[in-house]
Length: 188
Image 1 (cartoon, rainbow, N blue to C red):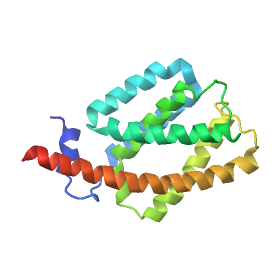
Image 2: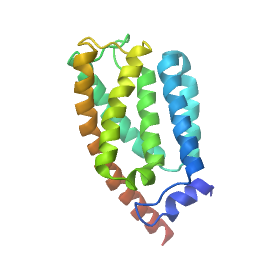
Image 3: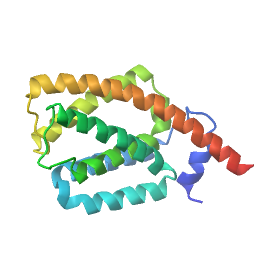
Image 4: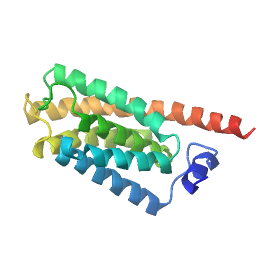
């Protein structure tokens, strides 16, 4: 069993924290993943898939949470597209965006203990601002259009991402608890 797979099962409460170097490596990797998705779009989907598979091999059970967050996130993006908040140069949601959602869900799962070690209000604030800034950066890099304009879109996305982050926190707690209970049952 890999070191990371063991550490997933060794944490006895939701408040464990990963070593700083590992957090730095994971955060840097996710930012690289984000840039590959946004800049490369459809041309680099194969690299995103490889990066996801490596993550899912290193961090067991990550894919389950990632798939659920991706489903929620893609639904949210689809609704925002239908409401005219976002526009992509694709007939439906672009594959690279689905891959980005899978990467985001994976990142959140991998750092779940770090997230849990901070104030939920701080995490919700960071999530709201980070989500809005991510779409603004995507707009600046030509990955998404904002038909309503920046001054309307960013506050809307900020509010939505603040609420979505609160949902993610609750969902993360439930999934982590279920995963720990399942791991304990396997040990018996």
